[in-house]
Image 1 (cartoon, rainbow, N blue to C red):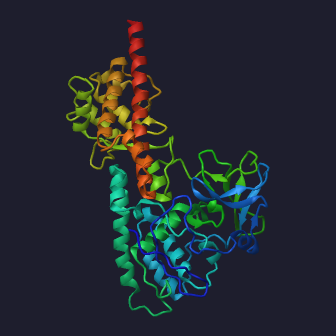
Image 2: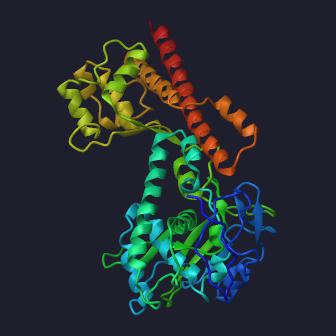
Image 3: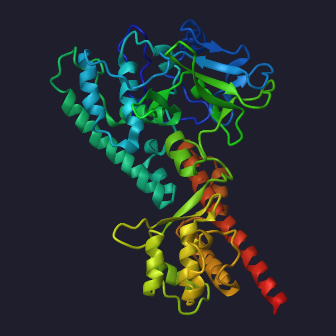
Length: 476
């Protein structure tokens, strides 16, 4: 979905809503070559920025925030007044907003970033927008897979992510037509984008800007005492890069007697030293989400996993490959089928997606299903609660032989999963050394990490099998 090169916009001229494909992951151009000073704008609007907070070029993630001096633990880093975050708030009396709201209602909830993206596009097109000092500092391009070439989408080599990328691309192409149909024949005062054409590429830019930078925070208080969940773009705060070991966190505070909410980025329970980057935890996510929404891949991500479809024939094939005699995954006994139903792996609307890798190593539902279907001892199985059968820490509840058979079946599933990748890790490493484009490099890094997850699971389970067999030998 690459598009034409973005023309240089200014405050006083027409601002085209085009988008370009990414050229550099670590040094993407901003929308204008010399954007307004974001720190000064936030201070001018009544916000606060710690004197040691500076914007700098990060070698890994591009622009980021760094401490120019030591910052004591518990300090406020950035404070935004309520009117500074960019939210989707429509003005019923504004003709352009009355068009934008129905358009946003056509966006499925799972693609919530597109809803706020419409507001972002509106403000980007608006001459004299309040948020222009912020928007002009946004990247011109994003390295998310919807902007990959068709070849690099294939280079991902991982069906679940290919499905999500194609789904998003399809949505953007279809939504482009919906937007065009709504915008045609509008009066200039009604047009939410200042009379400009909006295509799949500009919609993709806006959705990517939001998905990679927005935070879902508390909104208005509801009658039941809870708060609504509102996506917001937080100027400057959203330049903190990601870490699973962050030194900053986001807080929402309300001063006594003041109904307006302040949004803060504060230092966590440790001192931030000079030259340290300011880091937030974007979430305990797999690389699928990091690449899809943020445009980067985390090496050795402890939350990365692979998805498999629970399928009786596949499980039978894996068990036989592992040397398990007479597996019956395709034709479970009625009592076994009842347990599969409880695990939501059987029934009218089962959830057949199971995962390997991540903190669990093996998803509990898959482990329980294997233990149960590889056992013929109904009484022994029924002695245990499902929570025990789903737990990897419960060592061999149905006996050593059953546990070894379950682990060997999972190892065989891993071998089958590895076989679905056309290249080996050594091939991928060789390709990276040759020098490739940004999108090709990300696609290769992504698939390498997936293969590493599979290999790590195989190694872990192989060790567990050896320990179980040595215990069995000792006992005998």
